[in-house]
Amino acid sequence: MDDRFENQKLQETTVTEIRDENENTTGTKPADGAEKTEEPNRSSRQPGSGKAKKKRLTKLGRGILRIVLAVSIAVAGWSGFQLYKGIKDYRDSEQSYQNLARETEGETEEELVTEQGERYSYARANFEALAEINPDVAGWLSLEGTVINYPIVQGTDNEYYLHHLFTKEYNNTGCIFMDMDNAKDFSDQNTVLYAHHMRNGSMFAELEGYRNQEYYDAHRQLVLQTPSGNYLVEPFAGLLSDGYTDYIQIDFQDSDSFLAYVSQMRSQSTFQSDVTVTAEDRILTMSTCRYDVENGRYAVFAKLTRMD
Image (cartoon, rainbow, N blue to C red; front, side, top):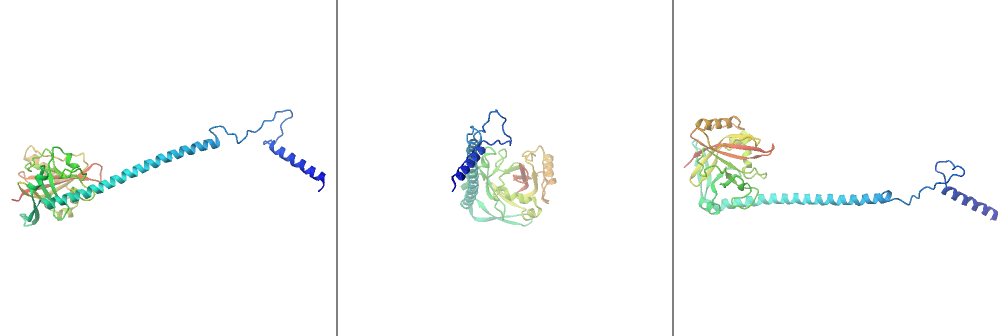
């Protein structure tokens, strides 16, 4: 190849490389004598800009992600523990009350006969055996064909048995307990019982069935056993409350105030009943929670009739 051609090509290449390196990005040439201003080296970044900034944000993001992940794991773990504990409480409670019924029921079944000739069979509770397990025992309540077949206790306050079984083991299922201000022998004109409305259907959850007339028609009587005698329990009213209305009343000034109370409960009842309540009668209030409103309550009011 001709040496002159090679030299010319080398010169053109050298000129092109110099022009690209010093190219005026505005498209105009600098004025004669003007000092050229070099473009900053793009690879020389100041701290806090470009890749360095991106790197710091990435570290921050990873840190936040770790925190969020740790919190999520903790919440999931706590929720799982609570779920496990709830299921365990249900299981332990059910087993405890089944064992209690088996150990303290009499050997033979007894029968209640109403004035209308209706017959209700029940296993007689052994109150001596129950008192040895827990001297707070006050009675035994049962509703035929349902899970309600539990002992009744009375504590020194209205809190302890919300979270303790009859055996006094800590358990959120609790126990059916009598108001601390009541006479333990059911001699007050109104005896009040409380129990949880458990989501697995145990304790007083069954009472919410009385919100429907059909349920009442099929469950018109319960049986209450006490150390001193047995009672037929006949519901006559069911009250829905928001939890802020005070429907608990144990003592009454006179017969008129008692009958007015009974009439008020009837007027707001979720079912209609033909049970007659007189001024000489005693009644039983069974109160539990409801979940369709915040802090809701549902109470069933029933007449007590001594059967022996």
